[in-house]
Amino acid sequence: MNRLKIASLALIAGASILSGGCSQDDLSTFAVKDSAVYFPSNNLSHSFIDTPEAEYADVEIKLNIIGPTADYDRPVAVEVNDETTTATAGQYTVLGGMVKAGATSGTVTVRVNNDKQALAQGDLALGLRLLGNDQFSTDIDPETKLPVTGGALVSFEAVLTWSNDIKMPEYMLQRNFLRYVSYTALWVDDDGNVYGEQNEAATRKRLSAKYSSYGLYSKNLAKILREVWPEVLNVFGYLGTDADILEKYPMINPGNVQDLYTKQLFHKLETYIYEYNQAHPDDILRHSDDAAVLNAAGNIVSVKSGGKTYELKLKENPPILVNPFSL
Image 1: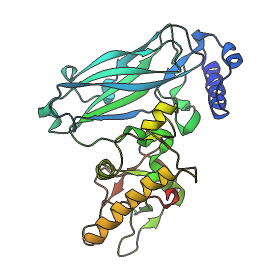
Image 2 (image 1 turned 45 degrees about the horizontal axis):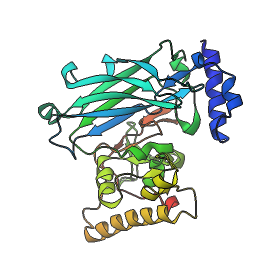
Image 3 (image 1 turned 90 degrees about the horizontal axis):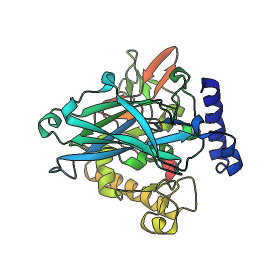
Image 4 (image 1 turned 45 degrees about the vertical axis):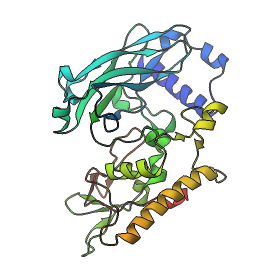
């Protein structure tokens, strides 16, 4: 399939989702052979922090498809990307990828080993690259970074990291839920470093406030969320909206002013941070060294301002602040 046709399918699929989904008539316009597959998020993580004695974990990496569903299971072709892989061959196994019959999404499953000696030295990473086969095309020019719904990008590459440390909650990147949770002002110095605070000499320049709207993440924030919030949150209904699911996992919708459950969650988080800081005025809660502004795909945001490009990985551990918009 040529790039133009795939691009057209992507745009139609995005418009259909935004308007409430594809109708059967829409789907019948395209043949199954016109389908493409991509990673909706290209930075993923797993932690053995809750299962330290496990020998391995099978991690399912989500895939989305462009085009119609099929009435049979469709395998997905994937290879290891050596350029973004730090793990050795004995530390992981790619178990394969599949889109089930009738499904509009699928998974690539990877088995990652709990190599305690290696993980004690730092995270391990496995880079993956989707390939075309007789079921799915990947014939979209990666240079175009064709946008689809929710601000995500069509991507054929992803990186899975695993560790024995805290990991980002899976719900955090759903429609960039992170932007509702934590934010910061952004300041830059003449060397291109980015901070969350002005310095005492007031020599740093303020970046536009719009760049802070993506959401600031760090492992320290994740540790707090583990203490304050449930481990699993049904953000924007990504886990499902059936009655039995909602009974167990109420839907989180920060855009709905009537959503009292969401407001209670954020109030609980704000109260935790406020009370801790009141009790420790000389050692308030701050982000860890990995603090960075992320987009919906989990990538660190880069912005241009004043003729310079800034990667929004922040220096000096800015304070943890709850986005007041969500309260």
